[in-house]
Image (cartoon, rainbow, N blue to C red; front, top):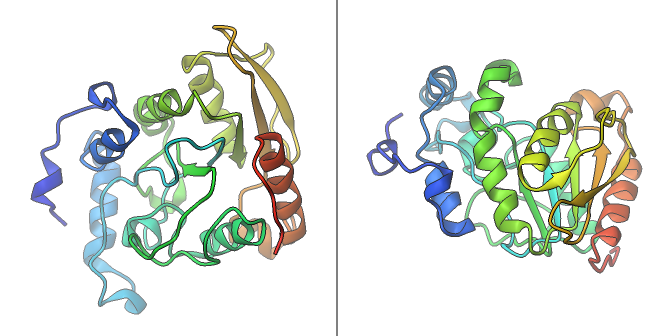
Length: 253
């Protein structure tokens, strides 16, 4: 699916002067041929339930305020979720659970996320991915992850004045984040800390600024939630702890 207004966008993350410019610039990225082909093929073929949708079919920018204190990092957009709706973690069961939990903690304005422009707001929280395009079988390659890395480095750079906590949703996000956080100016310990649900690591800022807390959380995928590896209570507890560590008011509904 072609989007002429975005397809020829040549600006990389270094050209952006604000988070808003970065969010716009990333939607024009075509750096990974396999991902471009897959995201656009999904938009052409569609699922029967979404035949009346015009798929977004572009890279997905982060979502949330520019002064967020808490950042949640996932894996990559779903082919018929965010790749369809144009908003991260929107249009699939993973996102349904994540946004409902944020709402229950008082960190979102409504319990559901349907599409871009549906009125949803996040309070002090931003959500992003290390890979911005939908990959086949939800499995980006190492090369695709690393090619996309500069976007996340720049995003965290713009957020650095206010971000205090980052939550890695899954082992992929954890491994992707460690070099990103190092590039963003935080001291990552050696040996590198291991991922686990509830893992928590304090990273000092190389410039002497406020430290960053890194939390590990099992991904909110159906594979984890349907098997009970991650329960709603576990997710609520961890995100509530992370939000409080970030200095956000948590007001359970």
